[in-house]
Image (cartoon, rainbow, N blue to C red):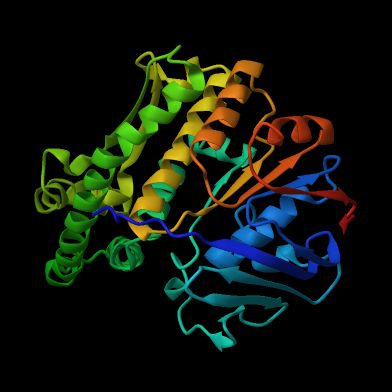
Length: 373
């Protein structure tokens, strides 16, 4: 499964027009470390989001494309050039109000955006990641699926199709209730599809967790100094019972509630510290350490699967961490070269002090109210 050779990939440049708070911006990057420094609200994180857009065809922070257009403007564009050693790729993203999003690689438009996912692997660590802890199971499933999908397009297709079938089955259950009818033959068609897709999804998630968990534990111990015991558990209804049995057993309940109550769309990841939910027992620093370890493990996992070091985006990660944990993260970055890194911080002096400890070339960009200095 793991590739022996890790190639280098980096983003050479970035060009924005009317994206979020930027009227226009052009940046040329270092192939190693790039820092965006400025006050809160200046637009540092928006630059990270533009980079994320080019890799995933969407924003990390706002899924409604038109809401990322500069205030009262009609469109935005993002362009960038990736160098993957063996080839250079120009990526273009354009969003115009009232029109379909346009996404191109080397001037050729995609028929399906899913075909782009995984070509330019990326991992982002952001304060928004706290949603993984405080929100419902869907957020954690999306994290798990996002990691697997960057290296497995078939899995991504299975997830998309499975979600479609669940929606269709739910619509049928609502139809049954509204019309006081029941058609087991039609329901069986959807059940068969769910069983096939759900079984494959569960197997892939189980395989993923088996490999991912030890990597996560390694990073958490490195950052925390082995001060706390944490665990990452995969919870699924399919662990002990196959989906066919579950669907039969939940039929009466499904008909009453008018939606599908069992399946892989109910899977979850449990985050624990000292055997208690980290949401309730973990301090802000411990929660942040947990999330950083989770994302660095994601980086490691993807790197070995795709054969490229993903881009690493670090959004305000040094806030709310004590000096010992900051030093541990700097040491990790120094010892395990992570490829191209993008860092945001409100304190320029702190940023410079941190990155000078890392033996790599770097660039610092001063950001002020959507202007790159």
